[in-house]
Length: 397
Image (cartoon, rainbow, N blue to C red):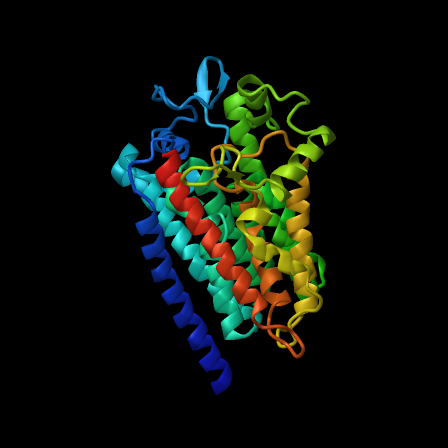
């Protein structure tokens, strides 16, 4: 049973999460044009599953990114978004609008993040500022209101990672954590690199072999399903079609992964700024988008010293969150592609919950800290992303 103070805090957290979700729905709905999203590979895949096929029958001309085997086109993106869409696809078929689905998923993510930050035990004001930063001060804003098949994958990975953070800081049930990690990894494969954080937290709570087994069970079962899925498409349990599709479609100079891409990616993720011009709108963004530091300058506050004095295990959770984010980003430092057609570097979404946890724990008010810095950088980040969504909608179409 919760004592009265704890029950009151829990009630306030829940109320704030509901308000944050409602406000996010309104903001994302107002920012997007909600026109039917034709880049909907996962919806076509969901319909194919329902019709008993693994390939896409007669894909429309505007969908061109497939891996081909025996003359048949296969979606090579991670499949969980298609599984997520199965209920809607069973009712409305190919009429499901991913733009509207993404608004809903994105808004729920904001509420989940607010629940998570409240569960960490930080100040209510810090949790609310953190939720605002996540919902409107990162490229999550752009992704949620835009809503194509790639953005939906990012949004669902965020949902799964946030559920994992919620569970790991509560009961740390290893089976549920493994399940959430499997969902994250089959939404966006690189997100799986951050999941050892949750295994550590589960094992720390229950240091026994059964914890490893329960955590690994849903991951192992998922791996078996994916192996069968790969074999059914390409005749190879380890071939998901992604790498050879990259070679066929984009022909990366040094292969999909190489240390030779590090210099370019340092600029992409940490140095790319808007271009300045003499006429309206004065600042412009090209298809590569902006760096993480440009879209979310609040990230610089990770450099502040210290951790929350009121949150339990703040130092441990903060460093684990930073480590998880660094591991995922490390993969992207050697990857040939930057995401393309984006306002900000969308691959950073694959570890965004880790960043928000670390930032909230780093910037919770404590004795001797300047309390205005976090809200000020959050507001600056929100301003950048509101401008970015406006710019992309009105200037780039």
